[in-house]
Length: 206
Image (cartoon, rainbow, N blue to C red; front, side):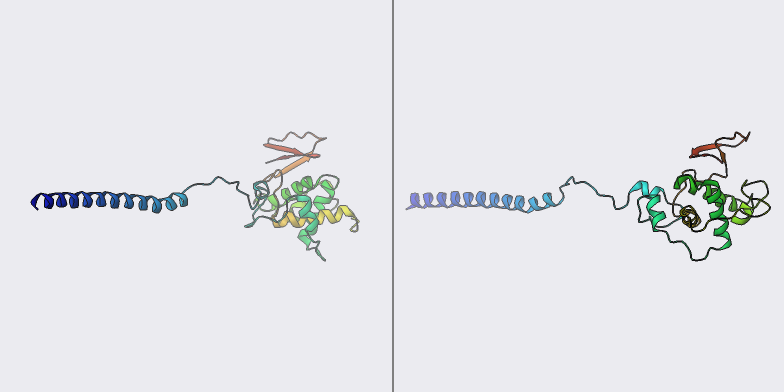
């Protein structure tokens, strides 16, 4: 009986040891099953990113807090309403754009308009658009403190007005933003100024 008891005790110990080993292995498997979702949650997936607003479009803004909803200056001009009645200031600004650049591109017209605005804000010239435009010896189209007659039904005038509104609101950047001076390409004044760029038929300076 003593010998059988020893066999039984040994068998019991062996069974307990095997059960313990199996139990430990089961816990390890459960840990793997728990960790797997964590690893999946922290994995990085490479996907293309779509920009909501084109960078070039945003770079064309001047003094605005939101990007315009158009992709080109031409589209913005088309979408800009002409005021039913122009203020004296917009009249002067549109007149300068019309007479200086009506045959040029929209960018060239905007560049001229923004020069008038830059001057009015500089402290070095009169502080209004009309003051800048009518300042003696500045714009060759001014004759005796007045502008020539304008065909206000013409497409060129309507464009000049829209560009004046855009320039005044600062809703599109001039290709030579910050320019304070310009002259036609067919003349060569001796100016000690910093040349910025040529836009259509004008050369612009700071």
